[in-house]
Each structure stands twice: as structure tokens, then as C-alpha cells.
Image (cartoon, rainbow over all chains, first blue to last red; front, side, top):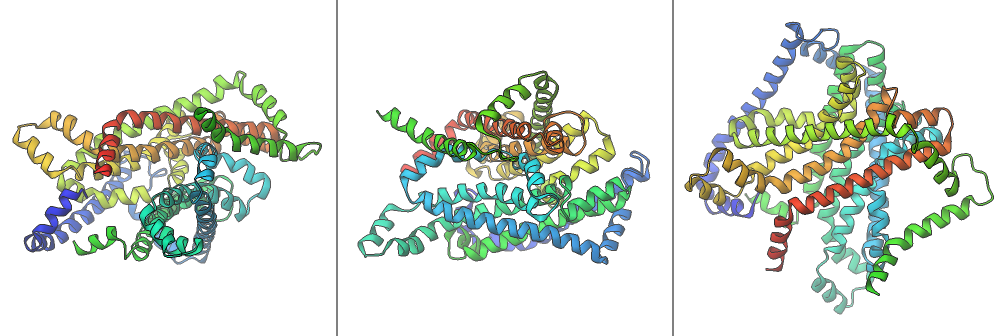
Length: 279
Length: 257
């Protein structure tokens, strides 16, 4: 939201709020209508024969297959494998990126010296490492982890570097004058400044990590939802495959929600979040 | 002196890393890690041949077509959805769901619907890249400064002129952020679509090398993908600097004030 919009929303609270209350359910209803409309279109396309039913089963069949999946232990086992790779990869990437980010970011010499290397390594697509992962680890979780960590690491590192560079010099010098040591300054001055950037990086990395986890399973064949999709496709279980695709979408939505929730909690003290709560 | 110093900062670490690589492979024969000299030789042998025309160029072509189409669809659709309030409310949850689906799972789906063709690969790239551009454009169009919007209304600027001179410029920082995400996604999808189901292209060739244990050749393929990623990022940064020059200038003024 632009500052001007925020201002106008804040200056007329009474009128704005009563209107909002009436509008909110209408908006949600429209959203639900949109989803239902999409499902209806999906149902009709194969039923009317626009696309062969063998290749695109109607929505009702796919949803039935998804509901059936929810009752199967095998389904939850693959979800578990995918989430395990996602979580481990994300944690490793964030830990490495935060550590290196703070070390590099707090020295202008290191920042200048590493800049070219980081700018060169960052755009390398992590899928380029797939053959290497296969050679080194085969179809194990380490293959997925290599890809996930590589892809998410840069997202977080760049944000942490921006965040550390954003430290207010006056605040930092004040802390120095009051005799705060290096560690105390990192904890009380640098860390709070960098936290919003870090959380943005973690949120982006969370999405990227899921994409790479599924990719590794799909292409390499390490255990998880991606491999199940590839197997369902080659085995001709078409509605099963579509059901799994829907499941990955649901996981994606859940991860987005989880990340936004964590971001909000971690930054509850920060003005960007606080003003959102007030408005 | 100053340029020399910047030069040193840019080159020092890469040179050190290559030296470390060279020293660590000196005199040993590691099956997995080729020596720098060997990699350079293989790189020339493998990629400066007819392979460049049969595998590299078609891959890049598909990538370009896919990304450009995705950007066009995303911007046009985004301006449309973003300017009509009820349309936005109607479609936003569905679009958010589509964005949340990890794009690589579309490869098997589209393979089924379109067969293993060039069209399939381009459609995979489009269907993965369109979401960041589309949703960012919607967001950017929605956040057009209301004062500017009302002013242009008062001056009777409507229709195409309004889109051209008000909506697109004020949404362009958001759009560019979406395009940046799309570019890296596009490269990933290009490689995956070729690795998963293909008989030509960069991704296929690299997997082929790995399966036949041609390790230095495989590494040279990884280097090609890396160079492609770096080149795309440079082109994007150059384009962004030109398109958003006014925006960065405005930011600087605001920050200085």
C-alpha cells in the first residue's frame, strides 16, 4: 500500500471500517465463487469432450482421488518425505546464510571482495546441479538437500547482506559510545535491523525450497510427492496424478500461510507490521 | 589507482578460488572433479561444435519464447484483473492457488496433454513463469497512487492513454520484480522439461553425459547453464536500470529528503 493510501485509510477510520465490515464477506464470497467457477469449468471441459477424459479427468474424479489419498498411509509417508527434505534444506540454508551474511556484511572489505563471486554464483540455476547430485548421492534425500540448500541459500544471504548494510550508523555509534562490545552490538543493533530483511529472505526461500524439493523428487527420483507424481503418470493413474498435483498446490498454500504467520510473529514489534494491525 | 583497486576487489576472490581448485587437483586423479585445464579443453570440444546449433540454441529459443509470452500474458492479464475490482475478488484466491503449485509438477501434466513436443516445453515455461508477473502486476495496478489516479480522471485521461501513461509506469517496479522471479524460474523449467522428457536440448545433453559417466563433459554442461544464468541476470539488470531509471532517481530523492 502506498503511503498516501495508508494515510487516507487512517484519517477516516469510522466510515472506512463500517464499510469494510460490510464489504469483506462479499469479497470472500466472490473468491469462493471464483474457485467454484474454476472447478465447474474443469468439470465441463472433459465432460463435453473438449479434451480427452483419459488425459484430463473431470474435477470431481480428481477430488475424489485426493480424498481417497488422504486415507492412505503411503500418501502421508511421501508428504512426510517431501516436508522433511524441505524443512532440513531450509534450516541448513538459513543457518549458513545468516552466519556468512553477518560475517561478510559486517566488514566492508569482505563485502567488496566477495561481491563479484556472489553475483556470479547466485544466478546459476540449482537444477544445473542435478547430475552432480545424482552422481554423489543417488536417489537419497541428500540429493534433494543439495539442490534445496543451494537454491535457498542465495535468497537468504542476499537479504541478510542488505539488512546488515542497512544498519543506522548513528545507532551503531551510539551503542559503541555506551561501551557495547561487538557481540552485544550484533545482538541489539545489527540483528533487529536485519531481521525484517531476513524474514523476507526466509519467506522467499521457503517457496523456492518447496519447488526444488518437488523437482528433485520428480527428476532424480528421491522419495516424496514428486516421485509419486512421476510414477502415477508413467503408470497411467491419471486422476491420481492430478490429485497429487493438487496436493502439492495445497502444501504450497499452507507453506505461504505458515511463512507469513512466522514473519508476522517475529516482526510484531516492527512498524511495518504494527501499522498493518492498527489499520 | 581507484579503478585498479576495484579491479582487484572484483578479481581477487575468483582467482584465489580457481587457484585453490587447481592446486587441490594437482597430481591427483579424482574421478568426480576434473582439473581446470581439462574442463576448459572439454568445454571447447563439447560446446563449440554442431551441438551449439542442435542443443544450445533451440533451448535458448524456447526459453525466450516462453518467458516473453509469459510476461505479455502476465502484464495484459494483470492490468485487466487489477483494474476491475470484482474480477480481482473473483479470481485472486484461484490464482494464488495456481501460484502455490510448484511449477515443475506441470511437466508430467503437460506431457500428457500435449505430448513430448516443443510446444509442451514452451507451455511448461509459460505456465510456470506467468504467475509471478501476473500477481505482481495485479498488486502494482491496485496500488496506483489514488491522487494521481483522480487527477488523471479529472483531466479526462481514460482508456488506453490511462493505461499507457498512468497504470503501466506506476506498476512497473512491481512488474519488474515479477519478471526477475520469472526469469530464474524459466531457466529452471527449461532444464527440467528437457531432463524429464526430451531427446535434445541442454538439459537432456547434461543428463546424458552424467548417465554415460562423462564427468568432465557433464561439468562443462553445468558451466554452460551457469553462464546462461549469469548472462540473463546481467541483461535483466541492464533492462531494469533503463526501464526504471525514473524510479531509482525518485527513490534517491525521497531517501535524501
